[in-house]
Image (cartoon, rainbow, N blue to C red; front, top):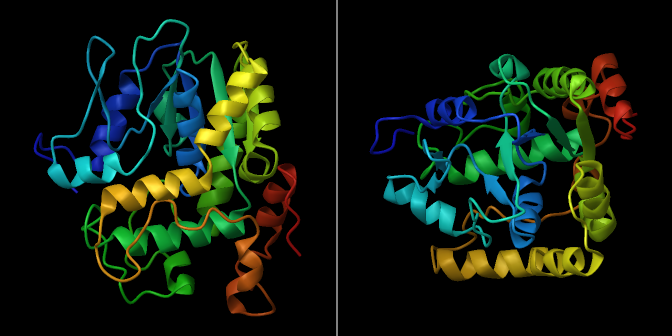
Length: 284
């Protein structure tokens, strides 16, 4: 999609990436891995969280909303708002790009936000399909099945929304994180089951203040129920079963469709089994 400034989402992502500095924290997150949740908690704690497809980093470091009205409406669905320049805050940058795009950036901190690949890929499918008629109008996936989606029919994305795409993304970023002075892995499942503990560990690893009471308040204000209620209020009555950013927020949704079939066999390949096991996910 092209906004009023003439940039596509990918071009805006690349431009924002070029505006980063060594103090920024890159959050390497495959699509649909919980970035909205993580970002909301961080913003509640006074940090900035940049969505590179929607926000635009200006020369002075401030964030500007997208010029396109459709994108602004979409952005308003997310409850939290970044506060650039707030004393004590850090700037976190949600990123779907391969680390090759950051070769010239001496990044001090990298966070890997990971979700069970079966859930991340399926949730990506539902998200892209839901928003294809509006903010993702360049996609043609209305009649594409999940299996066809995994075969890249009707979608162009970076990273590739395929089994190979998930593996390549996290392999590359894990190698980059090992070279960073500070790095952390945050699992979506832990953000859902023990969010205060997961956030406290993340902040401490990055050398940031982790006041437990403040973290618990931020987590409570970022619950699925609150974020979904905010989105529903902002979105208004858009018809039956409208697409939602906060769709289900469910751990282990893959159990509803995963079995002995061609679709599941896509995940039962050695490189996926090995890469998923690195982050604690057992695919069998």
